[in-house]
Image (cartoon, rainbow, N blue to C red; front, side, top):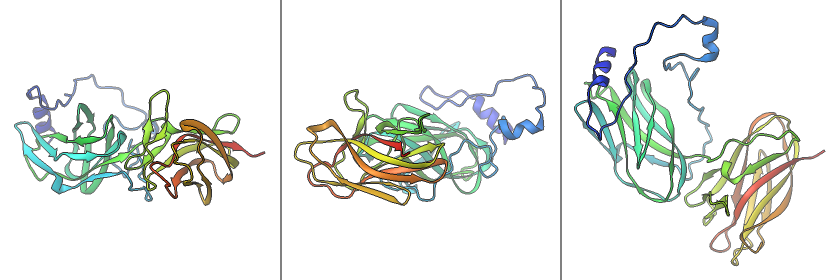
Length: 316
């Protein structure tokens, strides 16, 4: 199989065809200390139950709101001279923003380079052997507007059509900013850009005058932050939000762990006229990663609110 792949990867493809990198001939490197391999990882992809992998550990309670799932009946497969091509039927994306790309597949070979394309974006990631359906995160894409999209997936031809089988493609909402971490003074700031928007329409608005979570036109849409805590304890919770145009009066819940704090929106003078509302306290019992959500309970009129940030301040 390795000889076949090297031959195929070296073949010349048309300009519009996906390009898979060839291996460069290198001098034999010195053999590494076996004890270092556990910490530095292998030079070639390995699949030993996720150990040594760059794949995220998928949570068992992952929300489904805003996740786009494309099954076997949504794509066509064609065999080109040097590669296999999977083309998905056009589908609607109601929310712009960042998405994780997850492919579920089976593969008989140990290693296969692949490319995923949506619009003008290309994501490259190898697949590893999978006798049973396996979910692989290929990378992230950013869709700058809502609307209709098509996408394609490419892999070198394996000369055996049954060797690679695609079961499902999923686009999963992803945060646009980095994961927040606790500050030196113990405080934690959760900016709108770092929220995962589990939503159909609500999204992060990156314009300088906004930089907030907006288009909150459905009470079923919610925002979730995952953040790092070094010094656990009790924290007071403040939400900085805006509301206007007669939309005040919606009820919103802020939840962390088993604690849920609620408030009703007021007219702040506009959706980007920020007002701080202090809600009470939450207790984070252990260091490590934790989550907080802002989730509307009711929507009075056309939109619930815009959220600029959530601030957690240590209670001394």
